[in-house]
Image 1 (cartoon, one colour):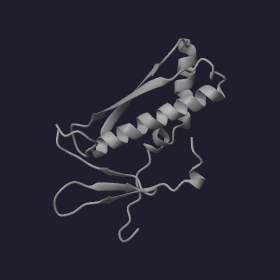
Image 2 (image 1 turned 90 degrees about the horizontal axis):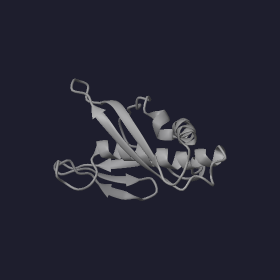
Image 3 (image 1 turned 90 degrees about the vertical axis):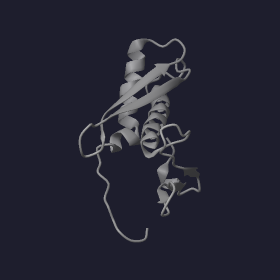
Image 4 (image 1 turned 180 degrees about the vertical axis):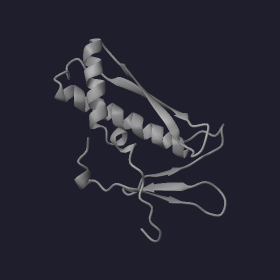
Amino acid sequence: MADLRSRSIGAKASLGRTGYPSIRSATGGELQIVTGPAQAGFNPLDLLLASLAACMSMSARIAARELGFSDAFVGLEVDVSGEKSTDEPSRFVSFTVRMTFQGEMPSEQQWMIARRAEEICTVSNSLAVHPRLLLGPA
């Protein structure tokens, strides 16, 4: 993964009296949030799941290299879903990460990569951390 000491990280959401939030990354990336069930785009839950999917995919490639499986690692698809709680507080009660490896790679190597990717992935490691809330300017 990228050396975060040399890359600015963070996000800022701006929201008016009406409409949806606009998100801006510390590096200038922008995206619009949607919440309608049929609207194309990302809502906050999609972003969380997408972050986990992206992180796990990049971490799997790193893991394959670390474990000496680079030649067998052709690529993979990571599909992440979450189950929302039916009671309060609103939250995910579980995440499912399905890794589908491309090419011919033994199942044992796939499992080794998947387990190591979970150890490497900053997002999966951060899901148990509660945010620290502050008021005032950033």
